[in-house]
Length: 80
Image (tube, rainbow, N blue to C red; front, side, top):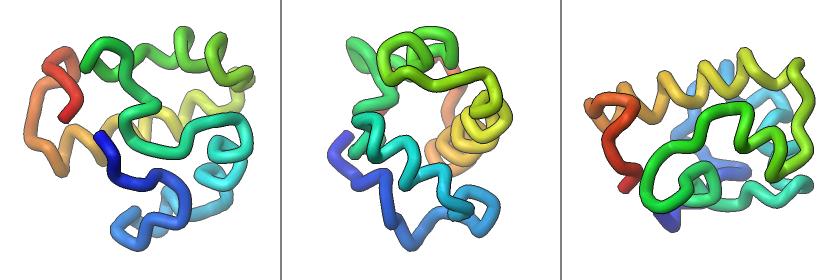
């Protein structure tokens, strides 16, 4: 998925509180960076890969909810 993650104007306000900038600095630049082999990665794997701490878990849940709502798909189905 090649949609930009950081400074994305379609994000709801709850997701535009600086988390995208923080994650961008750690290497998440596209929505596709949240996926591995076409599947949205669990938070634990993203944490290891991008050095996130546990305090980002709630934002991950919000982001996952946003993606699922926009995509209208089950969590375990592939990322676009």
